[in-house]
Image (cartoon, rainbow, N blue to C red; front, side, top):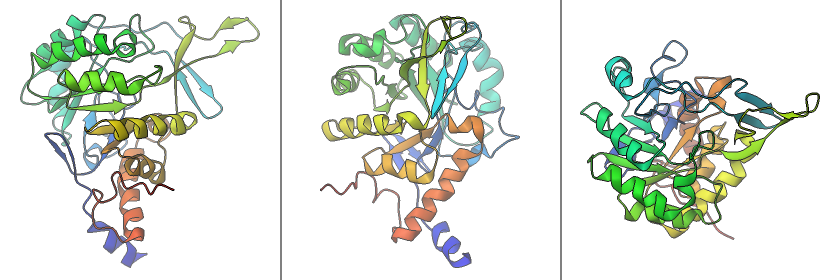
Length: 311
């Protein structure tokens, strides 16, 4: 075991996401790691390649009424509704703490209108922010998925944000579309540097006793291991047809899960629902990827990205 650990420690996990250089390809998924700084007592946030905040909106949001969560046999339904303190309070009180954690910071941005996205980015942008992930695909707010279901609407959001920042932009895509590639292509042509794929799948739960839906909004977003094969297929589709960095997300629990996304062409991965069970999951994935690469005799993670061996 000692020899194996020594070999794995020398492996280079660094990757590039456009202009971003990360020491490893693992980061938390937005909304599953708090704002990013408050879990420092539970795990080593500095171990990850980047931190992704929960989604921030220009104005504070109280979120959806309870209940907001419902477990499923292999995942989790949520209807949080983008609860957050708003851009002004985030920049004043949370951002200063976040930057002390260490890794590059990707701020997730949401909005009711396309103008909201640009406004929020303008309010937060500065030297302390490394990139923005535009959450154009949240299923739990009014108009949340309108921007990601239409290539034209997605393009308007991206181009609006591109005009107000020079930072890297990653558009977070919805899987609840007929043609995810057309939406992704529109985002890239409008100024997005890369894509995050995917957000949650639409799902619902019904209380048989009350005969009413579990959530007030009726449907919620399904995440967790149940969606991993579906998310992986979307990532594969995107990386086969588009040339850009793709951040793969959806049901990743183990280093082997993460490696599947990397082999399918993702340049980085996000771990989401698994954080609720173990906030240190991201740090564990980093060490787990090293062990997998050591076992395969690889020296860098980059040589495995997109290395899927087709029949």
